[in-house]
Image (cartoon, rainbow, N blue to C red; front, side):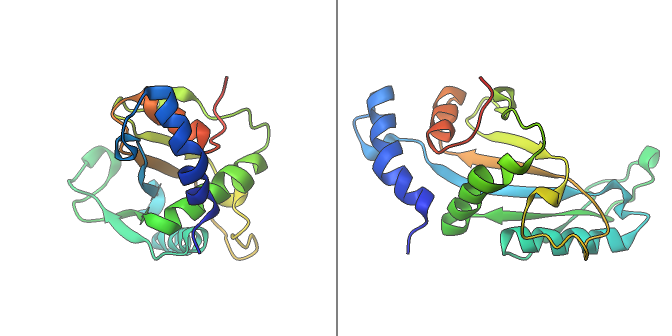
Amino acid sequence: MTPRLKDRYENEVLPAMMKKFGYRNRLEVPRLNKIVLNVGLGEGVAEPKSLEVAMISLAAITGQRPVITRAKKSVAGFKIKKGVQLGCKVTLRRERMYEFLDRLVSVNLPRIRDFRGISLRSFDGRGNFSFGIEEQAIFPEIDHEKISLVHGMDIIVVTTAATDEEASALLSLLGMPFKE
């Protein structure tokens, strides 16, 4: 069964994007490539248990096992040595990507207190969109009694769009709540 957001992309977003930007072929229309969720823990160096808690919560949110990220080089000011475990990340593609974005837009983002939308200034100039969430408590998959550490995460939505204008149109048609 195809995800609800993928059906919406095929039936509503594709024709709307073709009409708005004047694409002649369906393959020219930008689409989602992948979604990367990254949890960076500075305190992971001092407390190894925090990395384990972050991995458990990220696995519960995405349904996929996270990969541990390590320091690429030593930084004396932060007391970090090369190869030390600093966080974890998950890369979502295909059906899981569409299902996660659908849950994020329709369920999780409205649970943020005083949520007024996501800033449009978070595009990188090449059609990719990144934003941060301050705590994982907005996800209903998290069991609050088991999680002792509150951490945030970075969410990067990678698209095949060439410009930020095309990417913002794509994401807004998919339901991403941007600030006006």
